[in-house]
Image 1 (cartoon, rainbow, N blue to C red):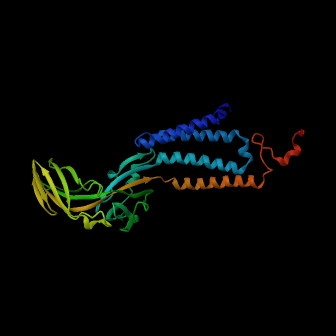
Image 2 (image 1 turned 180 degrees about the vertical axis):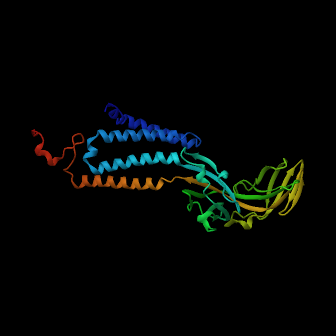
Image 3 (image 1 turned 30 degrees about the vertical axis):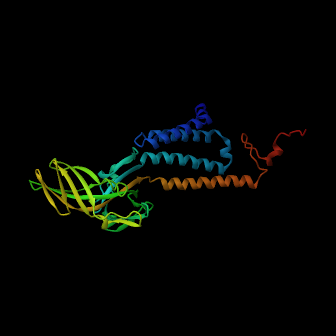
Length: 341
């Protein structure tokens, strides 16, 4: 019982809240930090609240107050469990590219999250359309995703900044990062063929430096620069879509500079490099937080319980409760008389 009393201390509550605040700041400024910064204070506060509910008779005397604290306890435990099983990451997909779990850059991942679950997502990047208002003010983003797998069957869905793709418990949102990709094909002397996309910096924020470096399968170090054919007029409304994905590729290799147009090929060492065309790529934020609906539901129930408690207090102002004894004014006939001075 002494241990329970110690766990119910308000000083421990304060210490737990301060530790949680520190954990939030650490995770905010260092996303790669251990999840223990968040989970440990949450579990400490859960123990503190359970102990307080055990030793304080006021909670048991008032159903509404008890229900509120049970909901509060559930919120703390669900928040800790959500952190342990969550994932936050980002990825970039080029038009025509299929989703791969290996392409996801993980920002935060709980120990209960399984990478095998991420592999259940199956879709392909379709067309992109980003509308801009004058002055480089992004308006709306529409990304078409072609769903695959047994549940997809080629269905096309539109995804945006506030309209996610929901699949396998994950939510996928578009971000402000997007730009152009150069589609390249490498043919080795042994007949092997490799195709892929080289993404250039986000456009239009980096329109002045569409540069990237690439190492060919043959080992050559190439400096690539994409020269857009039809740059937009930023003083007018404009749209970033496949119609603007056109241009030439400047290739710097072995001290020489080549200008390649779509379809061109060039011999480079032990292979042939072909510049196929220019496409768009889109950056995404991916999240796995399956307990959020439960957190919302329990939080709503807790607010309702608190409203129930205060409504009872307001409707019966004379039925105040002695916080230490649970004694109502209506029971004054059983209380010790108090002399009036």
